[in-house]
Image 1 (cartoon, rainbow, N blue to C red):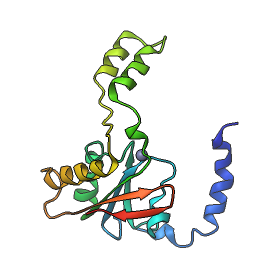
Image 2 (image 1 turned 60 degrees about the vertical axis):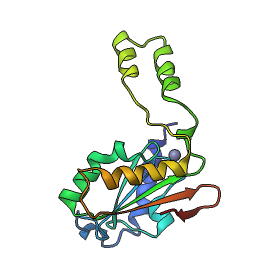
Image 3 (image 1 turned 90 degrees about the vertical axis):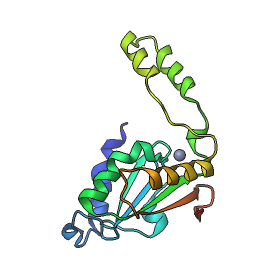
Image 4 (image 1 turned 180 degrees about the vertical axis):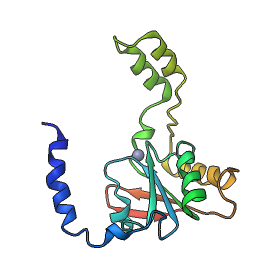
Length: 170
Ligand SMILES: [Zn+2]
């Protein structure tokens, strides 16, 4: 049974409290970007008291700034965001593998064509070894990146999936 078959019922439930959200503008009201991991335990609006229309939420495996740069530039230059909060989290899957391991998994698949093996070798998975250190690196990356607006307020945070608590780092 595919999950998509549950979407219609879930959406009906959501629309019961949709209210006047149809009038929201495209630019985020709070001029905020939340950058975080794709981890399914993370739900930034609920965990931070945000709502539809408040912020851009940019997610990828690990919540890596380098991987999110394209979206950040569009968010800042086209849609007016001026603040970035970087959230990584404890117990992140990104500390549990290495790029060479993942390349090997891709290449070991029997059906993989030769050019895909080359593609696997060219892929960096941007894993890290310490979540707090990863926040520090991503905040630094954003503060120093010439494509990010000068003067952008960048903060670093850790989320703990075991307790639901967020912790401000810097
Ligand atoms: Zn994660």
